[in-house]
Length: 276
Image (tube, rainbow, N blue to C red; front, side, top):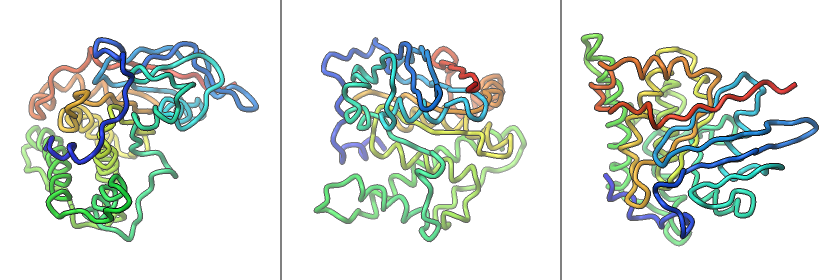
């Protein structure tokens, strides 16, 4: 499926960036409104790693995610995304980070089917003078999405002794389950082949089983979303607690069924405190 990426231009990582350097590096990063939104953020995330931002509601998780994505301005400290200075070159950073789910920002048009949503996103990524997309390209994306869904469903179905269900590619957006919408969000964000994918508030998945499936899907998807330039993407995910991620990492049977190697060394946890 990697051929899909050849349709889009490469994001502009820093010329002097080296794969051994952190994909995301922050020191003393802070944002203030009438009071601090977050402050003193320090983190180093390896290329292809997973940054898990945790904290209670109101701790600034979404603001930090959007700041690292170049969508919100910070007031203190420094950060580099693939070697690009966040404060000096936010516009370039925005080209390096694709946003998956952020409530109110990336909501679906419920009048469109999954296939139409994929086609719409592909067209958005093309030059303005090419407002169409081939059925083959849409099918390539749907195949990648179905592969992730099958790996995840298959892992837990194998444990339960049942058969995995296919992804409902013909469904309307509002007919999808919360988990299916989350996975579609991630798949659409990956189409820009940005080296960083950011997904906000995995806790919006109300069922614990869905949150576990979502974490496993992200671990599976890192290899499926791999791009020729920077390899597998670096992920930023926010949540109130990483308890379900820990459960997934401890479930060696499910990881083996989903063909996921032990990713623990590539996961970086960053906890935020409630705002006072």
